[in-house]
Image (tube, rainbow, N blue to C red; front, top):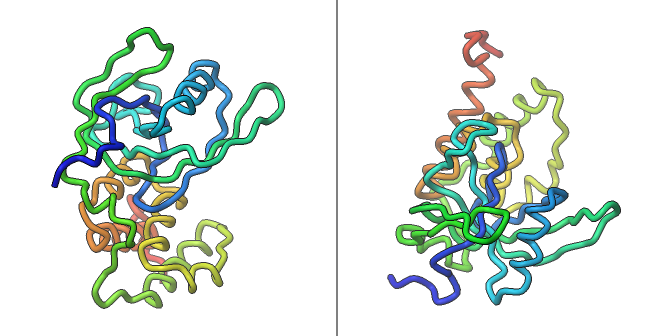
Length: 212
């Protein structure tokens, strides 16, 4: 499948540890650093209005992960003290080929969009035999363990892709775990990994404490 014409060869990059954007989701971001305020201003002047969300391989490091996800700026609000609140709508994952500084204060990256054609499909992915009840039971135990609050009505009503992808983005997993969820090729793969991460946490992780 050919690259969609509105997916450019280069995109501005926003490296942010612990933040991933997954297909057909939205990500709110508060922007305050001058270089990224400039990035938003520049992006809003382009037809695609895309920003590439990508994690550093090490928090605070210069090396970037190989896979990120581009989002289109669909809303922005000016806040006090020259801050911006923006909303990114996922467009497609990408493989980072190279980075370039150029004349801008922020990085730009050459993106390879091949292999992520399903991200461009407006219809959400599904999982055969999706067991929502089992996932929500595991989530309930995890939320109780971590003292998290959950909108159970929304979780019950959400389409399976939105539920799995939103949990993958919002739950307090490590940056490495979130990157693995982002890189999962299909929703079925991501659901399986999400189940594994929840079960691992419930069993105490490295502490090997089993939660009954």
